[in-house]
Image (cartoon, rainbow, N blue to C red; front, side):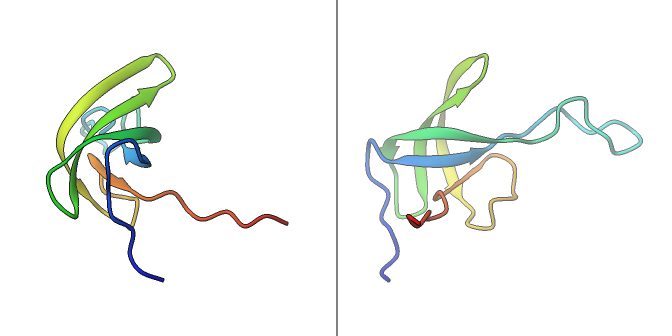
Length: 84
């Protein structure tokens, strides 16, 4: 399968930063994966996003792709879900 190319309007997943780590390494609010829509494309792995949270939404520019889905402040494609 060919890799997907980002384009305006596509749905992706965004990994939030969470709150800064405490001295013991814990976080008050850990990183979470959120739904996002691509609002601009800067290159094959860099986009602008409208990120949707339960309490509202925010815009972020120049967000880099990370297909591991683990790096805070990055985006990745949703997993493919096959119909049963």
